[in-house]
Length: 339
Image (cartoon, rainbow, N blue to C red; front, side, top):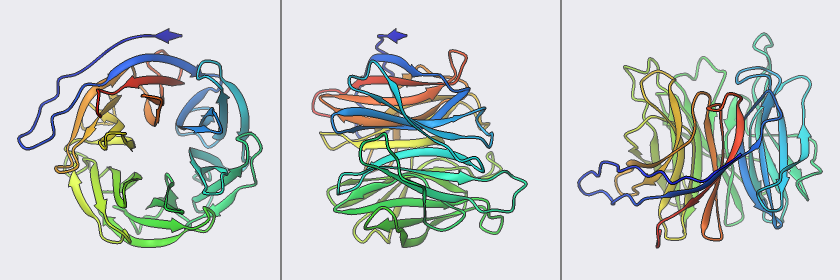
């Protein structure tokens, strides 16, 4: 299925904020739907090919998730490259990174059935070619979810948030760092506490670190639960937080060639979990505000986008059930000149 479409919104511009610039949706293609439920993925360009990873399972919250890796030379034809399974646990939210010595990695979470008194454990797998994968290696602390790894100047950084610990809720989040992608230690503990900070991604512009973070304070209608933009300078132990002005899920963002922060997130129409949709927009570094400029065809169970800037376009994968079955989609976006 291939859809070519252009859809642009006219967002509200706040005084003093950057003027949001339009983004064009050039093409959209479903690339995988072979699992019962295909979701929570990532995309990377590695050694001249495209790799996409995601969780395959019976449904969104089942305990039987496996990690699927698919590969494509051109983004048109995709084939399975690997399937990572664990008979005893649910594997969730696989995310790519590449080590300084050229190994492809996937990080994810090992989650045990609710009736087992076993901790959640973040994991990493290594591969020389995207097809042969190492055994799993535990990373970070038990019951801390190291959600997405970013490498900068030879070190790996990731935010880890508390899961499965009643004593920690309404939650805390810490910054981990690693020199080898295998041993992660706490760089800054409790960088944010309260209102359940969780899914978070760190990117770098020069040596400045930016963190896009989801919050889910409960009850939602009485607690701040909008997303946050964090900013820090080396050694990244002190963070300044700015309110996005919007509740988000599945945060992903990149620094564009023009130095702007482009984000793809799930947004919600109400204070309830649904309805939700996948959108793309700009984050203003000065104010922290998110300006939605493009709605991606999506609905139902959806979002968790990945963004890769390549040869003048932004390649974006995400999952959605707007056509019935929860499937993985690939969109290509064109940014305005100079962005």
